[in-house]
Image (cartoon, rainbow, N blue to C red):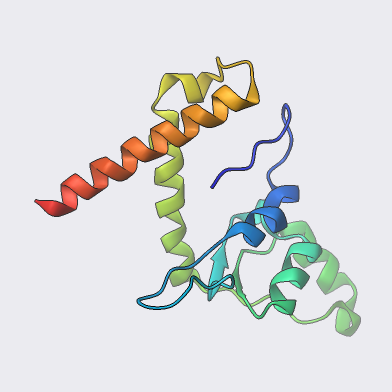
Amino acid sequence: MFILTEGQAADSPQFIPVLKKVRVRGPVGRPRTRPDAVAGDKAYSSRGNRVHLRERRIKAVIPEKKDQAANRKKKGSRGGRPVSFDAELYKERNTVERLFNKLKAWRGIATRYDKSPESYLAGLHLRASMIWIDDLLLTAD
């Protein structure tokens, strides 16, 4: 699932819309809409993102930015508790980073030659399908 933004828009504002589209398949039944945990880099450490995850009882595996930690400490006891962070679970985030590298290995996606959002999105879906089929063939051996 992909969400396109215009120009050089930041990723963080798309965090909640993407999370709303997530479906976690289990062994039986319909897919869940609430994952156990969400990992992200420091760009996603905003208060709004953390509140949204906390309200949905989703574990946030997002490191705290240095300036956010400094502001919290500066407030003293009114600054709240430090965010919890699972470093071992955070290491799994590289799976997503590797996927983006595989997507960008296709020149049309990396350079954004496609002018219309529809053709760019079609290219993303095509490349993702190719990666998925390659992974299926590798695991079948």
